[in-house]
Length: 404
Image 1 (cartoon, rainbow, N blue to C red):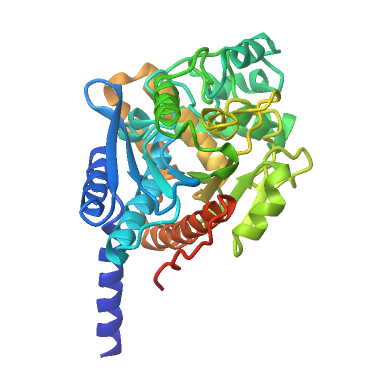
Image 2 (cartoon, rainbow, N blue to C red):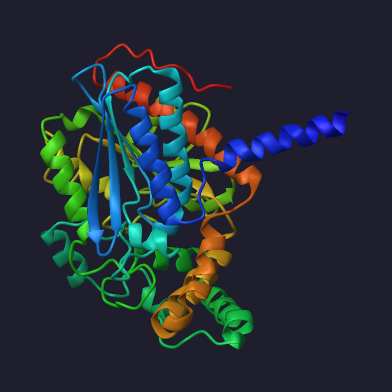
Protein backbone atom coordinates (compact mmCIF):
# COMPACT_ATOMS: atom_id res chain seq x y z
CA UNK A 1 0.00 0.00 0.00
CA UNK A 2 2.86 2.30 0.88
CA UNK A 3 4.50 1.82 -2.51
CA UNK A 4 1.19 2.53 -4.26
CA UNK A 5 0.72 5.72 -2.27
CA UNK A 6 4.30 6.70 -2.96
CA UNK A 7 3.87 6.17 -6.70
CA UNK A 8 0.61 8.13 -6.61
CA UNK A 9 2.35 11.04 -4.87
CA UNK A 10 5.22 10.89 -7.35
CA UNK A 11 2.77 10.97 -10.27
CA UNK A 12 0.94 13.96 -8.81
CA UNK A 13 4.26 15.72 -8.22
CA UNK A 14 5.33 15.12 -11.81
CA UNK A 15 2.02 16.49 -13.10
CA UNK A 16 2.19 19.56 -10.84
CA UNK A 17 5.80 20.37 -11.67
CA UNK A 18 5.47 19.48 -15.35
CA UNK A 19 2.48 21.73 -15.87
CA UNK A 20 4.67 24.81 -15.50
CA UNK A 21 7.56 23.65 -17.68
CA UNK A 22 7.54 23.45 -21.47
CA UNK A 23 9.46 21.70 -24.23
CA UNK A 24 9.24 24.47 -26.82
CA UNK A 25 9.29 28.25 -26.89
CA UNK A 26 5.78 28.36 -28.37
CA UNK A 27 4.41 26.14 -25.58
CA UNK A 28 6.12 28.25 -22.91
CA UNK A 29 4.79 31.47 -24.42
CA UNK A 30 1.25 30.10 -24.59
CA UNK A 31 1.37 29.04 -20.94
CA UNK A 32 2.69 32.48 -19.99
CA UNK A 33 -0.01 34.27 -22.01
CA UNK A 34 -2.77 32.02 -20.72
CA UNK A 35 -1.63 32.52 -17.11
CA UNK A 36 -1.56 36.30 -17.55
CA UNK A 37 -5.01 36.30 -19.17
CA UNK A 38 -6.42 34.10 -16.40
CA UNK A 39 -4.88 36.33 -13.73
CA UNK A 40 -6.51 39.27 -15.48
CA UNK A 41 -9.92 37.92 -14.52
CA UNK A 42 -9.07 38.55 -10.85
CA UNK A 43 -6.51 41.35 -10.85
CA UNK A 44 -5.59 44.34 -13.01
CA UNK A 45 -3.25 42.79 -15.60
CA UNK A 46 -1.98 44.14 -18.91
CA UNK A 47 -0.30 41.87 -21.44
CA UNK A 48 1.83 43.18 -24.28
CA UNK A 49 3.88 41.41 -26.96
CA UNK A 50 7.02 43.11 -28.28
CA UNK A 51 7.87 41.64 -31.69
CA UNK A 52 11.61 41.08 -31.97
CA UNK A 53 11.78 39.20 -35.25
CA UNK A 54 9.45 37.86 -37.93
CA UNK A 55 7.52 35.71 -38.22
CA UNK A 56 6.55 35.47 -34.55
CA UNK A 57 9.39 35.87 -32.08
CA UNK A 58 8.15 38.04 -29.22
CA UNK A 59 9.10 39.28 -25.79
CA UNK A 60 5.87 38.99 -23.78
CA UNK A 61 5.35 41.35 -20.87
CA UNK A 62 2.66 40.96 -18.21
CA UNK A 63 2.12 43.92 -15.90
CA UNK A 64 0.25 43.18 -12.67
CA UNK A 65 -0.85 46.46 -11.12
CA UNK A 66 0.04 46.82 -7.44
CA UNK A 67 -2.12 48.19 -4.65
CA UNK A 68 0.34 51.08 -4.22
CA UNK A 69 1.50 53.63 -6.76
CA UNK A 70 5.04 53.30 -5.38
CA UNK A 71 7.79 50.90 -6.43
CA UNK A 72 8.29 48.28 -9.10
CA UNK A 73 9.28 44.60 -9.11
CA UNK A 74 10.53 43.00 -12.34
CA UNK A 75 11.08 39.29 -13.03
CA UNK A 76 12.72 38.37 -16.34
CA UNK A 77 13.61 35.20 -18.21
CA UNK A 78 15.35 34.08 -21.38
CA UNK A 79 18.14 36.63 -21.83
CA UNK A 80 20.20 33.58 -22.79
CA UNK A 81 17.52 31.91 -24.90
CA UNK A 82 17.62 28.23 -23.94
CA UNK A 83 17.99 29.20 -20.27
CA UNK A 84 14.52 30.75 -20.45
CA UNK A 85 12.57 27.56 -19.75
CA UNK A 86 13.45 27.73 -16.04
CA UNK A 87 12.46 31.39 -15.67
CA UNK A 88 9.32 30.84 -17.74
CA UNK A 89 8.18 28.05 -15.38
CA UNK A 90 8.78 30.26 -12.33
CA UNK A 91 6.77 33.09 -13.91
CA UNK A 92 3.87 30.84 -14.89
CA UNK A 93 3.77 29.31 -11.40
CA UNK A 94 3.92 32.75 -9.75
CA UNK A 95 0.97 34.03 -11.77
CA UNK A 96 -0.98 30.85 -11.01
CA UNK A 97 -0.35 31.37 -7.30
CA UNK A 98 -1.47 35.00 -7.56
CA UNK A 99 -4.65 33.81 -9.31
CA UNK A 100 -5.42 31.27 -6.60
CA UNK A 101 -4.83 33.74 -3.76
CA UNK A 102 -6.56 36.68 -5.45
CA UNK A 103 -4.25 39.00 -3.52
CA UNK A 104 -2.84 41.97 -5.36
CA UNK A 105 0.88 42.62 -4.78
CA UNK A 106 1.79 45.84 -2.98
CA UNK A 107 4.04 47.03 -5.81
CA UNK A 108 3.35 46.73 -9.50
CA UNK A 109 4.98 43.55 -10.77
CA UNK A 110 6.29 43.11 -14.30
CA UNK A 111 6.95 39.67 -15.78
CA UNK A 112 9.26 39.81 -18.82
CA UNK A 113 9.14 36.53 -20.74
CA UNK A 114 11.84 35.43 -23.22
CA UNK A 115 14.04 38.48 -23.76
CA UNK A 116 15.82 36.35 -26.40
CA UNK A 117 12.88 34.57 -28.07
CA UNK A 118 14.92 33.34 -31.06
CA UNK A 119 17.47 31.69 -28.81
CA UNK A 120 14.77 30.10 -26.69
CA UNK A 121 12.94 28.79 -29.77
CA UNK A 122 16.10 27.27 -31.24
CA UNK A 123 17.76 26.18 -27.98
CA UNK A 124 20.64 28.65 -28.39
CA UNK A 125 22.16 31.02 -25.85
CA UNK A 126 22.70 33.62 -28.57
CA UNK A 127 20.10 35.57 -30.57
CA UNK A 128 19.22 35.75 -34.27
CA UNK A 129 22.49 37.62 -34.95
CA UNK A 130 24.63 35.24 -32.87
CA UNK A 131 24.82 37.94 -30.18
CA UNK A 132 24.97 37.30 -26.45
CA UNK A 133 22.34 39.70 -25.11
CA UNK A 134 23.95 39.72 -21.67
CA UNK A 135 27.08 41.25 -23.19
CA UNK A 136 25.21 43.53 -25.60
CA UNK A 137 23.40 45.91 -23.22
CA UNK A 138 25.64 48.90 -23.89
CA UNK A 139 25.32 52.56 -24.83
CA UNK A 140 26.97 53.94 -27.98
CA UNK A 141 29.90 55.03 -25.81
CA UNK A 142 30.04 51.56 -24.31
CA UNK A 143 30.29 49.91 -27.73
CA UNK A 144 33.05 52.29 -28.74
CA UNK A 145 34.98 51.41 -25.60
CA UNK A 146 34.74 47.61 -26.02
CA UNK A 147 35.52 47.78 -29.74
CA UNK A 148 38.61 49.91 -29.06
CA UNK A 149 40.04 47.66 -26.38
CA UNK A 150 42.49 44.81 -26.94
CA UNK A 151 40.58 41.87 -28.53
CA UNK A 152 42.67 39.56 -26.35
CA UNK A 153 42.19 41.57 -23.16
CA UNK A 154 40.92 38.58 -21.20
CA UNK A 155 42.59 35.90 -23.33
CA UNK A 156 39.74 35.16 -25.74
CA UNK A 157 42.07 34.75 -28.71
CA UNK A 158 44.28 32.36 -26.72
CA UNK A 159 41.38 29.93 -27.06
CA UNK A 160 40.24 30.82 -30.57
CA UNK A 161 40.46 27.20 -31.78
CA UNK A 162 37.58 26.49 -29.40
CA UNK A 163 35.78 29.82 -29.26
CA UNK A 164 35.45 30.74 -32.93
CA UNK A 165 33.50 28.55 -35.37
CA UNK A 166 35.58 27.83 -38.49
CA UNK A 167 34.12 24.53 -39.73
CA UNK A 168 31.29 22.07 -39.10
CA UNK A 169 31.81 19.73 -36.14
CA UNK A 170 32.96 16.29 -37.33
CA UNK A 171 32.22 13.15 -35.35
CA UNK A 172 35.91 13.03 -34.40
CA UNK A 173 35.79 16.60 -33.11
CA UNK A 174 32.60 15.99 -31.09
CA UNK A 175 33.87 12.91 -29.28
CA UNK A 176 37.66 13.35 -29.28
CA UNK A 177 38.96 16.61 -30.80
CA UNK A 178 37.09 19.04 -28.54
CA UNK A 179 38.40 17.21 -25.47
CA UNK A 180 41.99 17.13 -26.72
CA UNK A 181 41.93 20.84 -27.56
CA UNK A 182 40.35 21.65 -24.21
CA UNK A 183 42.82 19.58 -22.21
CA UNK A 184 45.79 21.15 -24.01
CA UNK A 185 44.54 24.71 -23.61
CA UNK A 186 43.56 24.24 -19.97
CA UNK A 187 46.94 22.68 -19.22
CA UNK A 188 48.61 25.68 -20.86
CA UNK A 189 46.46 28.53 -19.49
CA UNK A 190 44.37 27.15 -16.62
CA UNK A 191 40.64 26.75 -16.00
CA UNK A 192 40.08 30.24 -14.57
CA UNK A 193 41.77 31.83 -17.58
CA UNK A 194 39.47 29.84 -19.88
CA UNK A 195 36.35 30.86 -17.99
CA UNK A 196 37.47 34.49 -17.78
CA UNK A 197 38.18 34.56 -21.52
CA UNK A 198 34.79 33.08 -22.31
CA UNK A 199 32.57 35.19 -20.08
CA UNK A 200 34.39 38.46 -20.82
CA UNK A 201 33.24 37.82 -24.40
CA UNK A 202 34.40 39.09 -27.77
CA UNK A 203 33.24 42.10 -29.75
CA UNK A 204 35.46 41.34 -32.73
CA UNK A 205 34.70 37.75 -33.78
CA UNK A 206 31.15 37.48 -35.10
CA UNK A 207 31.14 33.67 -35.32
CA UNK A 208 32.52 33.20 -31.84
CA UNK A 209 30.66 32.11 -28.73
CA UNK A 210 29.92 34.98 -26.32
CA UNK A 211 29.92 37.51 -29.18
CA UNK A 212 28.68 40.79 -27.71
CA UNK A 213 27.77 42.38 -31.02
CA UNK A 214 28.68 45.79 -32.40
CA UNK A 215 25.36 47.53 -31.91
CA UNK A 216 22.40 47.32 -29.56
CA UNK A 217 20.11 44.44 -30.46
CA UNK A 218 16.34 44.71 -31.11
CA UNK A 219 15.41 42.94 -27.85
CA UNK A 220 17.12 45.63 -25.78
CA UNK A 221 15.79 48.50 -27.90
CA UNK A 222 12.21 47.24 -27.57
CA UNK A 223 12.33 46.43 -23.87
CA UNK A 224 14.13 49.67 -23.03
CA UNK A 225 11.50 51.69 -24.89
CA UNK A 226 8.68 49.80 -23.14
CA UNK A 227 10.14 50.41 -19.69
CA UNK A 228 10.86 54.07 -20.39
CA UNK A 229 7.34 54.69 -21.70
CA UNK A 230 5.49 52.85 -18.94
CA UNK A 231 7.73 53.17 -15.88
CA UNK A 232 10.02 56.11 -16.55
CA UNK A 233 8.51 57.97 -13.59
CA UNK A 234 9.34 55.20 -11.09
CA UNK A 235 12.41 56.16 -9.01
CA UNK A 236 15.23 53.76 -9.75
CA UNK A 237 15.79 53.42 -5.99
CA UNK A 238 12.37 51.73 -5.77
CA UNK A 239 13.07 49.09 -8.44
CA UNK A 240 13.97 45.47 -7.65
CA UNK A 241 14.63 43.08 -10.55
CA UNK A 242 15.42 39.35 -10.61
CA UNK A 243 16.77 37.91 -13.87
CA UNK A 244 16.78 34.09 -14.04
CA UNK A 245 19.59 32.09 -15.66
CA UNK A 246 20.79 28.48 -15.72
CA UNK A 247 24.21 26.89 -16.11
CA UNK A 248 26.74 27.76 -13.43
CA UNK A 249 27.06 25.74 -10.24
CA UNK A 250 25.95 22.38 -8.82
CA UNK A 251 22.86 20.88 -10.44
CA UNK A 252 19.66 22.39 -9.04
CA UNK A 253 21.43 24.75 -6.63
CA UNK A 254 20.94 28.46 -7.10
CA UNK A 255 22.96 31.51 -6.24
CA UNK A 256 22.19 35.23 -6.41
CA UNK A 257 24.85 37.17 -8.33
CA UNK A 258 25.01 40.85 -7.42
CA UNK A 259 27.36 43.82 -7.42
CA UNK A 260 29.73 44.03 -4.47
CA UNK A 261 28.17 47.17 -3.01
CA UNK A 262 24.71 45.51 -3.00
CA UNK A 263 25.67 42.30 -1.22
CA UNK A 264 24.83 43.32 2.34
CA UNK A 265 21.29 44.42 1.49
CA UNK A 266 20.70 41.36 -0.69
CA UNK A 267 21.87 38.96 2.02
CA UNK A 268 19.41 40.59 4.43
CA UNK A 269 16.48 40.71 2.00
CA UNK A 270 16.95 37.23 0.49
CA UNK A 271 17.72 34.92 3.44
CA UNK A 272 18.25 31.22 2.90
CA UNK A 273 20.25 31.44 -0.31
CA UNK A 274 23.84 31.99 -1.36
CA UNK A 275 24.92 35.43 -2.57
CA UNK A 276 28.07 36.08 -4.63
CA UNK A 277 29.58 39.19 -6.19
CA UNK A 278 30.45 38.94 -9.88
CA UNK A 279 32.41 42.20 -9.92
CA UNK A 280 34.81 40.95 -7.26
CA UNK A 281 38.23 39.99 -8.63
CA UNK A 282 38.87 38.04 -5.42
CA UNK A 283 36.00 35.59 -5.94
CA UNK A 284 37.09 32.06 -5.09
CA UNK A 285 38.27 29.83 -7.94
CA UNK A 286 35.29 27.48 -7.83
CA UNK A 287 32.54 30.07 -7.32
CA UNK A 288 29.97 30.91 -9.96
CA UNK A 289 31.06 34.57 -9.79
CA UNK A 290 34.73 33.88 -10.54
CA UNK A 291 36.18 35.47 -13.69
CA UNK A 292 33.52 38.13 -14.32
CA UNK A 293 35.48 41.23 -13.30
CA UNK A 294 36.01 42.44 -16.92
CA UNK A 295 32.51 41.67 -18.21
CA UNK A 296 30.61 44.50 -19.93
CA UNK A 297 27.14 44.76 -21.42
CA UNK A 298 25.11 42.88 -18.81
CA UNK A 299 21.51 43.87 -18.19
CA UNK A 300 22.28 44.62 -14.53
CA UNK A 301 24.28 47.69 -15.47
CA UNK A 302 22.01 48.79 -18.30
CA UNK A 303 18.30 48.82 -17.49
CA UNK A 304 18.41 51.11 -14.47
CA UNK A 305 18.75 54.05 -16.86
CA UNK A 306 15.11 53.73 -17.95
CA UNK A 307 13.73 54.63 -14.52
CA UNK A 308 13.58 58.02 -12.81
CA UNK A 309 17.04 59.10 -11.76
CA UNK A 310 18.59 56.95 -14.45
CA UNK A 311 22.24 56.00 -14.20
CA UNK A 312 25.13 57.92 -12.68
CA UNK A 313 28.13 59.14 -14.61
CA UNK A 314 29.76 55.76 -13.92
CA UNK A 315 26.78 53.95 -15.41
CA UNK A 316 25.54 52.66 -12.05
CA UNK A 317 21.90 52.97 -11.07
CA UNK A 318 20.04 52.83 -7.78
CA UNK A 319 17.86 50.09 -9.28
CA UNK A 320 18.74 46.73 -7.74
CA UNK A 321 19.04 44.09 -10.47
CA UNK A 322 20.23 40.63 -9.44
CA UNK A 323 20.80 37.37 -11.32
CA UNK A 324 19.37 34.14 -9.97
CA UNK A 325 21.57 31.41 -11.45
CA UNK A 326 20.59 27.72 -11.24
CA UNK A 327 23.26 25.07 -11.73
CA UNK A 328 22.95 22.41 -14.43
CA UNK A 329 26.06 20.49 -15.56
CA UNK A 330 29.83 20.87 -14.95
CA UNK A 331 31.42 23.91 -16.60
CA UNK A 332 33.57 21.90 -19.01
CA UNK A 333 30.46 20.11 -20.30
CA UNK A 334 28.74 23.45 -20.91
CA UNK A 335 31.78 24.83 -22.73
CA UNK A 336 31.91 21.74 -24.96
CA UNK A 337 28.19 22.02 -25.74
CA UNK A 338 28.43 25.70 -26.69
CA UNK A 339 31.47 25.10 -28.92
CA UNK A 340 29.83 22.17 -30.76
CA UNK A 341 26.45 23.88 -31.18
CA UNK A 342 28.06 27.07 -32.44
CA UNK A 343 30.03 25.22 -35.12
CA UNK A 344 26.96 23.31 -36.20
CA UNK A 345 24.84 26.46 -36.34
CA UNK A 346 27.27 28.30 -38.60
CA UNK A 347 28.51 25.49 -40.85
CA UNK A 348 25.82 22.77 -40.88
CA UNK A 349 22.53 24.64 -41.22
CA UNK A 350 20.65 21.55 -42.41
CA UNK A 351 21.24 19.88 -39.05
CA UNK A 352 20.84 22.85 -36.71
CA UNK A 353 18.06 21.14 -34.76
CA UNK A 354 20.39 18.27 -33.95
CA UNK A 355 23.29 20.47 -32.91
CA UNK A 356 21.01 22.53 -30.68
CA UNK A 357 20.32 19.45 -28.54
CA UNK A 358 23.80 19.88 -27.09
CA UNK A 359 22.98 23.27 -25.57
CA UNK A 360 19.42 22.23 -24.75
CA UNK A 361 20.60 19.30 -22.64
CA UNK A 362 23.22 21.42 -20.86
CA UNK A 363 21.10 24.41 -19.92
CA UNK A 364 17.69 22.78 -19.50
CA UNK A 365 17.85 19.70 -17.28
CA UNK A 366 14.61 17.83 -17.92
CA UNK A 367 14.59 15.92 -14.64
CA UNK A 368 11.88 16.05 -11.98
CA UNK A 369 14.22 16.87 -9.08
CA UNK A 370 15.86 19.73 -10.99
CA UNK A 371 12.52 21.18 -12.06
CA UNK A 372 11.16 20.92 -8.52
CA UNK A 373 14.18 22.79 -7.13
CA UNK A 374 13.71 25.51 -9.77
CA UNK A 375 10.11 26.05 -8.72
CA UNK A 376 10.84 25.90 -5.00
CA UNK A 377 13.75 28.34 -4.97
CA UNK A 378 12.31 30.41 -7.79
CA UNK A 379 9.08 30.92 -5.83
CA UNK A 380 10.95 31.75 -2.63
CA UNK A 381 13.13 34.37 -4.31
CA UNK A 382 10.15 35.79 -6.20
CA UNK A 383 8.25 36.38 -2.95
CA UNK A 384 11.35 37.83 -1.31
CA UNK A 385 11.66 40.18 -4.28
CA UNK A 386 8.08 41.39 -3.80
CA UNK A 387 8.64 42.00 -0.10
CA UNK A 388 11.96 43.77 -0.69
CA UNK A 389 10.40 45.88 -3.44
CA UNK A 390 7.67 47.02 -1.07
CA UNK A 391 10.24 47.79 1.61
CA UNK A 392 12.40 49.84 -0.76
CA UNK A 393 9.32 51.75 -1.85
CA UNK A 394 8.46 52.57 1.78
CA UNK A 395 5.41 50.30 1.88
CA UNK A 396 4.55 48.01 4.77
CA UNK A 397 4.92 44.62 3.07
CA UNK A 398 2.33 41.96 3.79
CA UNK A 399 3.07 39.70 0.84
CA UNK A 400 1.95 36.17 1.72
CA UNK A 401 4.55 33.43 1.84
CA UNK A 402 4.47 30.81 -0.92
CA UNK A 403 2.38 27.76 -0.17
CA UNK A 404 4.25 24.84 1.33
